[in-house]
Length: 461
Image (cartoon, rainbow, N blue to C red; front, side, top):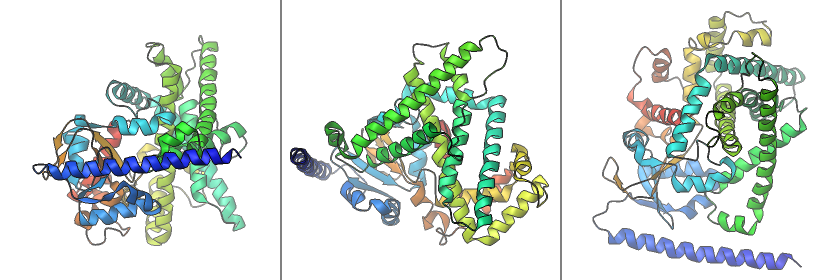
């Protein structure tokens, strides 16, 4: 019986939201048409079209981008501007960088999970975390420690895959990549063994599942215009999100408190903890008011986000593409074996220990293949910046304060105007080899890739 009042409340809320959306969209149209001196990008649809095409969202955006390199999707409260134009992307990510940021739009969508982390905030907090990240990753000790962790887990992963191959058993490789990278990121960040690959740590596995589920629900907020109503009523995916975030918080706070106790108990010990959390805790002593436990929690979760999915998804697409292109696979194999001077019967552990920075820097063909993978399947298929003050984009289109500009690495990688008629084909491109060798300047066609990479570096990745 309790179902019906809840259902009626939800139906009424949805109807009210639809009426509000229709009214606001009409107001946006009237405001746009009445400003004859304003030159907005052409309208290609509405945010409702995104919801209808959610299962093929990036291909839908690519389809629209082939007609207009810069276009709008109508939204109730502001203009949503989408672009694949490299000059526009360079303008918002570099030329007028200070005028574009995460803004209210991203902060509202992401803060429940990621708090005041670097992927959510602007201004002083962003600069502070950028400085912390630079400090945390620039030391030789951290680089050596993280390198050893990733090599060890790579060997562990190779053993697991080999066992599947020996038994001729099917398995999901992306799931293994996710577990392996989560183990590596957590060991580097928190100094603890999560052991997702082994599955022996129940609490760690529950955290990983809750973190992944929370990320998926948070992402859905970008197309679900009713998520705030659902959160207010504590129903549906928003009710699930609340429970999952509690699991995440309980686990992370427990690790932070444990590390604080360990540092206190070894205060007179000359041995230094090599994980990133320990270094951040040392820094927090210099500024205890601003470096609260909540702030540390936010920083660390953003760090996990930066490393886990990006690495695992890239590896998944990389292996998918080289499996479809055996000639590329063979060239990579030959290059790796030549550079590290390993025998074909070398053990996984011995092999992984030889994969160091110096040898990786000499694997130009591997670098090119990974770059081509990222061109077709970028870590962030789409990203956005909120405009802080009125601006004019290259080409003459205007952007008002509060408008959201989306740049689309996935669609950009498929534009024939940037990559030629074979834009959607995975192949060796000379530009990547030139970038890998660092001996020549990369061609203009690689500019979109470079711009997005530089933006990620400024963002703290």
